[in-house]
Length: 382
Image 1 (cartoon, rainbow, N blue to C red):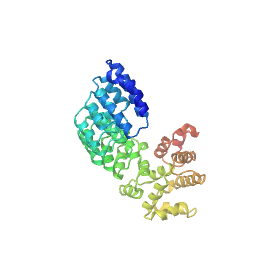
Image 2 (image 1 turned 60 degrees about the horizontal axis):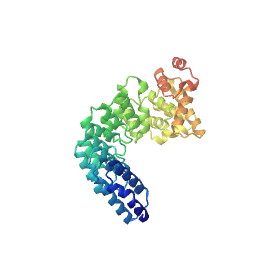
Image 3 (image 1 turned 135 degrees about the horizontal axis):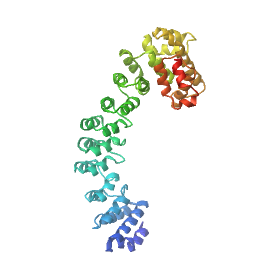
Image 4 (image 1 turned 180 degrees about the horizontal axis):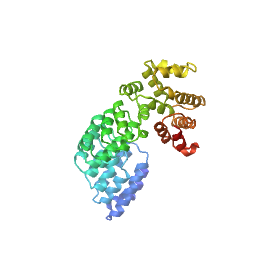
């Protein structure tokens, strides 16, 4: 950097220090910052560059200080002392640094939050990474808009307790409830609370994408207006403990033939197996053998033992056969594509199911018209 420093000393640095024109100094500052940020530097070079940045941060012209803040907002070259000095500046200078600079400690960011400026709290909440201690203070003390930005930021390390505080403070604010609901990961206790607060659309997202207790999913299913929106099948797919989930459904008398047929038709074989095991009072491995590896009478035997309606057996038989055929074709049974093909092929056989169940399954098709099915005729036939 020696030749570089000498070259700039004769031109840009002189303009930066001695020019009376603010625009001229700002242009020099921008050029210097861009050049410094792109260079490979040793320790001596970094020290020299940081002295130049200190000169810029002390310039009387806001244009110069803003050029520094905007150009090096995410640079690790920015000294902490310079970053803190810029935070004390006007918002036009401070906000780029607050939102992006890696120079700050957690205590620095907490100090910014507690200073109380809404726009600065928003900048902290929207950073690429918000450490847990900072997120906790924002959750407890941040303004409404900052808390919304925090909740919507999946890179904010929000603890279960902090999320609870947000709900305590802003549980009636629909935009904040929605922002929390659409986070990638939610603790069970938080999901449970949100289900009671969210709109129908957000509530459905919650119980589809996040784990909830069986009783919560059942309660939601009972509150929905149409059975076609019941998502116990989807909830089972994301459950971390499927046997416990199935046992919970059975304890509440909702583990019935309708739910099992919907699950099977949508490719949820694991739910079907565990449900048969639960209803028949037999271990899962035995139920699996009866479904998959006990000859043509195995399924009928476990089906009857589970107490399911005889009139629906052929529909279940068709579902199991369809699942096996698709698996034999090399399909990934865990994929969305497999589930979609399973549903399409199952419905193409016009199974003998109830009108409600058939309507539910039809609505799960992405493009019913592509199937070549007469939906009204199929529903009428049921």
